[in-house]
Length: 243
Ligand SMILES: Nc1ncnc2c1ncn2[C@@H]1O[C@H](COP(=O)(O)OP(=O)(O)O)[C@@H](O)[C@H]1O
Ligand SMILES: Nc1ccn([C@H]2C[C@H](O)[C@@H](COP(=O)(O)OP(=O)(O)O)O2)c(=O)n1
Ligand SMILES: [Mg+2]
Image 1 (cartoon, rainbow, N blue to C red):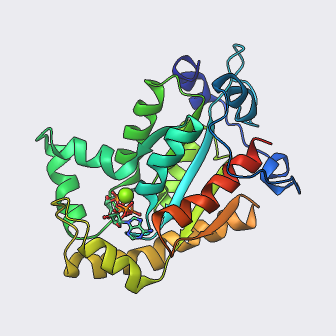
Image 2 (image 1 turned 180 degrees about the horizontal axis):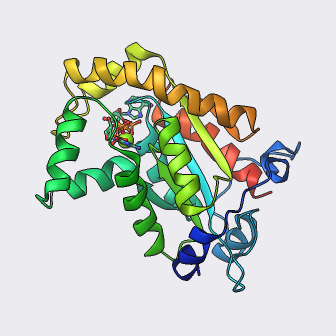
């Protein structure tokens, strides 16, 4: 199990050859189909990275990227529900650390208020622990990696790479409109912090998208339109992975 493997993975660097990604094959895309039987999905979404050495298989990992307000969280909830993925949101893990009132939480809060990025070792450690305590065979990591430092720290600490990177492409004015209407009481959903987050996204997150694009791992999705329309494209992608 991944839980038992992470220690071993820390010592053993293993990478995923992008050439094995199934979504690069010209596979027929089925119509909007109902959720597949879980045993079928289990077989279809098994990571291409192979086994960890004790007979267990590493989970299939999809990084979900896009600017603030592009709809990552909204779409992840639906992917998780229809395709049996565990949904790990980096932002939620950080906010949950803030809610403990720890010193680390206070540090995180101050960084988030400023629209900046939390030091990678803190975020990767939270993600690693969440993965360790899950038996999921397929994992969505939402809002991570936010910068090259995040990406490199994840690969170093977990010894693994994503199997797939989804990038929700959304114009800035639409993202601002959505964030100002999000209404979840978040300390960073105000126009001053939003402007800073958009700058950070352009300067630090886009290079990560470019890196994975050069490795043939990115699937870009147009994130304008209704939630339903966007999920139509998302559904097609995940259905094609499993065909
Ligand atoms: N396609 C869409 N059209 C309009 N609003 C959307 C759409 N998708 C999500 N939203 C709303 O926009 C806000 C930001 O979405 P969210 O999923 O939290 O984005 P992200 O995780 O990328 O910041 C939320 O209030 C959400 O309900
Ligand atoms: N990998 C990450 C993810 C989020 N953060 C911080 C900085 C981000 O502005 C906040 C909020 O992230 P979150 O993914 O919840 O934000 P959005 O869903 O994109 O609006 O958390 C981080 O420092 N590093
Ligand atoms: Mg989000």
